[in-house]
Amino acid sequence: MAAWLAPGVLTVARAVVRRPRRLPVRGEILVEPGRRVGPDDVIGRDSSEQNLHVLKLEVERGELQATLLKQVGDPVRRGEPVAYSTYLFGLGYREYVAPVDGTVVEIQPRNGFFVIRQPPTAVRALLAGTVALVWPGEGVLLETIGAVVEGTAGFGDPTWGRLHPVAETGDGRQALAPGHLGPQVRGRVVVARTWPDDHSLVQAVRFGARGAVVGSVDRWLLRGFARLMTGLSREELEARYYTPAPEGDAGSGAGTARDSAGGEPVTFTLVATEGFGRVPMREEAWALLLRAAGRPAYLDGRVRIRGQAGRPEVVVPDPEVTDADPVTEESGRPGATAAAVQDAGQQAMARLAEGARVRLIGKTRFGATGRLLSLPSEPLALETGRQVPAARVALDTGEEVTVPWQNLEVMVH
Image 1 (tube, rainbow, N blue to C red):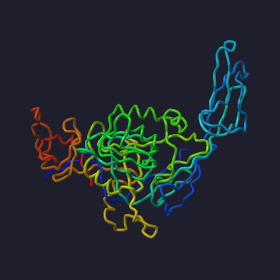
Image 2 (spheres, rainbow, N blue to C red):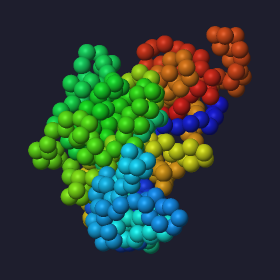
Image 3 (cartoon, rainbow, N blue to C red):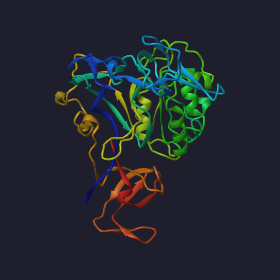
Image 4 (cartoon, rainbow, N blue to C red):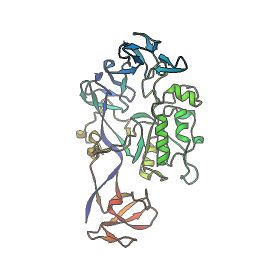
């Protein structure tokens, strides 16, 4: 029986998962190895001494031309004017605004430097589990047992929220629409087997959802949504769109520290399990996420490139793991050894062999799933007449096809 190495997409119901959580800049770690943490627990704070933001004010011949609205020691809010200058005999006007919330710590009139120090940022665990390792001043390594669903495309930094599946309509291939969303998704992660339409992602952000897991997403829709979300604050969101006032949390607590000024950035994470286009979520992933409805999940929408292993992913910690039940590979728990590829976010290549569950990733029948029937050692002829190393695959629809093995992805489960 032939065997080849091929890309693998993970759908595992129970595995040991290790994920690093690092501070944006060096700071203070507030937890120690062996401590159990919840997703909303603070693991550390970065150093305010390194969170400096500098504005360059107008200077002419060593003299400051701008009129200061704030002095050293004054607090400022993101978007608040701190200085202004006029030119062309008062016909022109230039305003300088604070890029972040913070405190004015230095003003240098000779060179026009206006320095704002941002307060320390609390970094939360996001993943419920055990602190396996501490890097002093830098971050921690978290370890847990849970389910893992990998995606192919995504957007957004790590976050967490309770899974909120959206009911299917018709044959399950209808797009996720704004009508499926409402105040009940606040603080949650929306799960849909299909794909979002042009307005549903914005609607999810307006109602306070922290993220979404979908089958696929249109490439241009994702690019436009990413541009909208870059640098967007809560105040700007409320000014641009009508946003209903919170009526209490929908079940999960805050994923990021919120300040009283309301200037915190709006965060939203998207994971598309099947990538770009209009492909419904694979059955294994959909069934697993349905069973985990209401449970807290860790989302990471980042796509690693240039030699960095990893995919967008959803991790759902097992609620049965308690303080008296340590998370170690030696514990003998079912599925523990299945996650060796998950150590610190690294994934190995999967073995492509007869009987393996596979997914098609070429242009033809993209996203279709099935089981590998045979992997001949000799090249096979495709419909185009070209002979290439290929495999025979029995699709879930009952059709048997010949597929180049480079266009196959092993579904590890």
